[in-house]
Image 1 (cartoon, helix red, strand yellow):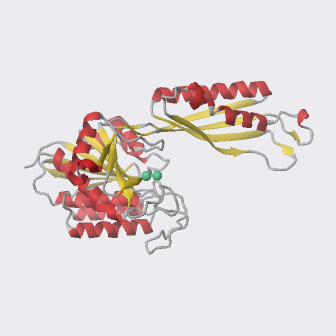
Image 2 (cartoon, rainbow, N blue to C red):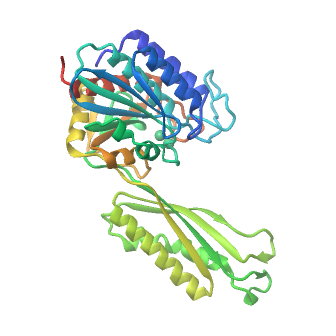
Image 3 (cartoon, rainbow, N blue to C red):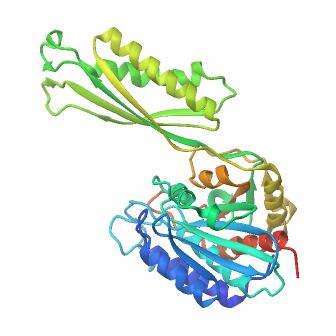
Amino acid sequence: MTAIDSDIAHDMVRWRRDLHAHPELAFCEHRTADLVAKELEEAGLVVTRGLGKTGIVATLVSGEGPAIALRADMDALPVHEANTFGHASTTQGTMHACGHDGHTSILLGAAKALARDPQLRGTVHFVFQPAEENEGGGRAMVNDGLFDRFPVQAVYGMHNWPGLPAGQFAINHGPMMAALDTFEICITGRGSHAAMPERGIDPFISVAQITLALQTIPSRTLSAMDAAVVSVTQIHGGDAWNVIPDAVTIRGTARCFDPMIQDRIEAAIRSIVRGIVDSNGATASVEYTRRYPPTVNTHSETDRAIAAARLVAGESGVQIGCRPSMASEDFAFMLQSKPGAYIWLGADGTSPSAALHNPHYDFNDETLVIGASYWVALARQELPRG
Ligand SMILES: [Zn+2]
Ligand SMILES: [Zn+2]
């Protein structure tokens, strides 16, 4: 394991718990960014603030050499924390339920450790991004000129992963996380008395048929070899026991790993909706939005990430060719701009970690040093020794 000085290891736990107690939602990470900027300025890094609103790039330059970017996310979730320990959230309804408090502390610790290394030759840009959850802070930073202002050969990301033991890593050459698309289908019929539906056009009939028919997209429109999921997650309509409303809205999400499959899912949703509402005499509008692209690692950077992870976890501690997740990640936007690799850091301790986004979740502090050691090993590997 790459050594992390004990004062930094101690500070990482302190920062992590402090951030956990003070979670901030997407694009509101002001206190978090203040903490990151203060610590890194003290360590002698050049800190640039305000990329993608609350994002930070902290730059460590050690002479001539390659440049890489290492990225962490800073935002919390609108989840009401169920934990009661000392560092539980002090902000009602907001919680670090995805471990971004841990990711921020890990990258902060790695930056401090690398700032003490006189032998690096090159540049490391430490990217602290806002708004990973839903709002695309990674895209906001890229659109704000992240890689024009801070050119790099490659960008690397990491996420803690419940279900994988602490001390292990998992990675794939290729897809790691799915694309995130959303859809909203507004079905309009003609409202009527619930006792006399023949006098109207009941939108709920179309809602029920569409909800079921959407499941034929993964099972019958796409090949069994094409991983995809289509989920209806909201149905809104109606206010009374005895009134059939004019209109009902269906919302949901689709996930897959291939832009061509995204196109086929969108086309299939439109065709199913059109056919069903036509047959029922209703009308519908469909809004299909591509929110996050798939997170796809590039081959050679994956090899580099594996080599660095093996320095920390050993040959057997790095799972290669892991099954990708149908969840999504806005690091995808950085991988659309630069080659790079995204790795999972095992999160399970003596007892399994609660799931990500669960109100009982807490980042496993045992993994802070392991995560920081990976960043340090990767930077040392990529930046030739002086
Ligand atoms: Zn999350
Ligand atoms: Zn996350």
